[in-house]
Amino acid sequence: MGQHIKVIAGILFTMAIITMSGCRNKTAEKRISSGDISMTEVDSLQIHLDSLTTQSTSYLQLVGDSTIAFFNKPNSDIVLYNIKNGTTSKIKIFKEGPNAVHGVTGFCFLNPDSIWLYSQWGYEINLIDSKGNRTTKYKLSTDKDSSGNILQYAVNPYPTTTTPYTVKNHIHYLAGMNNRPNDGQLPGTVMIFDEKNGSWKTGVTYPAEYGSTEDLAKWDPFAYRQVQYTMDPQGKMIMNFPASDSLFVYDPRTGTMSAHYAAYSEPTNIHLCEAKTPEESIKNFLKQYCYTSILYDKYNDVYYRIIRKPIESEAEDLNAQIRKKPISIIILNKTFDKIGEFSLPNDEYYHNHVFVTSDGLHINKLSDDDDIMKFRVFRIIDK
Image 1 (cartoon, rainbow, N blue to C red):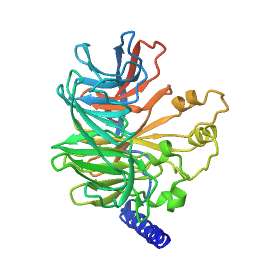
Image 2: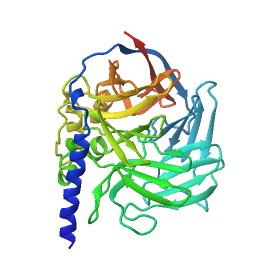
Image 3: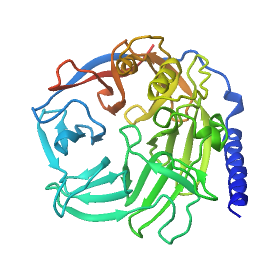
Image 4: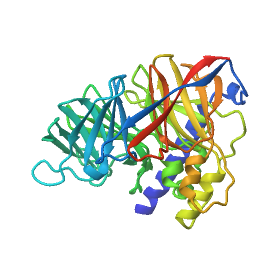
C-alpha cells in the first residue's frame, strides 16, 4: 500500500509541475535586454553598533519606513535601529527560565508588545512583549494539520530576510523549502497558520525546472531549494524560485497560482549540479546563475528581482567569493513586465539582507569595522 501511495504522489507531483509550467505566458518567452528604467547609487547607510552587537545577522526586518529590526544572535536579542535619528533599543530573547525561547530563526515585529518568534527546530511560534515575556505559544507540525490529517505538502519553513515571517490580520505566512515527504505528500514551500482557530495548511510545489521528486532532493537546499517571496498590495505571495526564470503569484485564499516570465537578459541555463561536499556545493553556486530574492517597492510600484551571476575563481576563501559574486537587479512593473536592469558595482555583498524604504533599495555589504553595519543604497531612475 505504501509503495502504491508513493507512486500516486509522484504522479501528482509531475502533474503539479506541468500545471505550473503550463501557466507561463508563452508570448513572453523571450528575454528583454534593456528597458527604460535603470538605477543609480544615491547614498549609504551606516549603523554604529555597540560592543555586544555584531554586524553579522541571520534575520532582518524593516519596521515601517524608519526602523530596522535585526537578530543579534551572540547576545540573544532583537536590535531596533531608527534610520532617521540613529537611536537604538533592544528586546531580549531569554534562553533560560519560564520565558525561554530556543532556536529562533525568524521573527515578525508587529509592535513593541507583539513580537512573533519562529523556531525552526520544533516548529514553534511564540509571542513575546518588549520585556521578553512570553505570552503565547503554538506548536505546529509539518506532517499533520491541527485535526491530525496528513498535510498535502511537506514543507520546512525557514524564515530569512528575503523569506520573511509575515503576520497580517492574524494569519501567519511562513515559507522555506520542502521537507522530506511522507507517504502521499508532495514537496511544498509554504505554510500558512491561522491564529484565530489554530489551524494550518501547506502548499506551493516546485516548478518544472527542478525535475522529479528524486531530482529535487539533489538541488542545494539553501542556494536553490529555499524560496523567497514578497507580498503584493492585494495580499498575494510573489514567489521566487532560485532556479526558475519565472516568478509565481500564489493567492493563499484560493490556492491558485500563475506564472510570469521575469528572466535576466542573458541566458541563465540554471541546472542541477550534484555535490558530494559543502565545498563542491559552493563552487557549483559560484559558477551558476541564481535568482536570490524578490522585493516590492511600494513607493514606485515596482518589483526588484535580484540575480547573482557566475564568477570564475580558484581562491581559497570561498565565502569571500560568495560575497563577490556579481549582482544584477531586474526591475519589473506591477504586472511583472521587465522595464529595466541594473548591475551593481563590484563589492562584497550579503545578498540576503536587502530591504526597500522611501530612500531606495538597501543592500548589506561587508564592513571592515565589525562595529559598523553597512548598506549601499540604490534608487530607480529613467535612462
